[in-house]
Length: 171
Image (tube, rainbow, N blue to C red):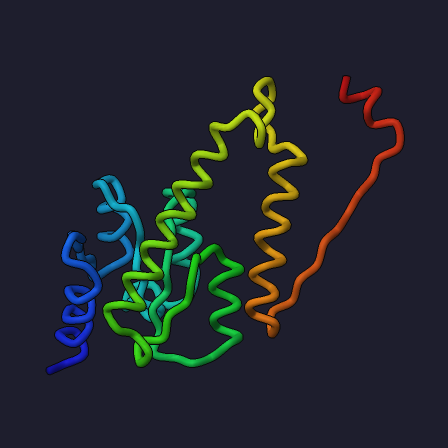
């Protein structure tokens, strides 16, 4: 079988209750985002637009859309760059099978739904301004730290800024 047939076999094996839509260009893919798409599997070397700018384009078009990168490369720097650009995950095609793909897709969609639910929760967003609260910051900080612990080769940093007498302005 050729690479495309093998990949389609993995997609079919990933879950029997999924429906797949295939796009061969980034423009065609962006147009399909208007359909009921729940996640994007993005080939890292799509012919009409190579590189990770496609992640940014998808996130600009559909900010809540989970994007999973598929690559033939085993380059950790590439994976980190994809995550920095907004990808949920980075999968190497050589390690891909139906169970792994199903697991990654399910978790990416669950995270996206949970984030959407948090946006509607006044505990995480100020009802007057719509701005994120300290609770959301702490929640996301904890998630980021856990991700760092799982992937110790990645960098992690926190910038804390305290403005004196900001409460006077804020009230």
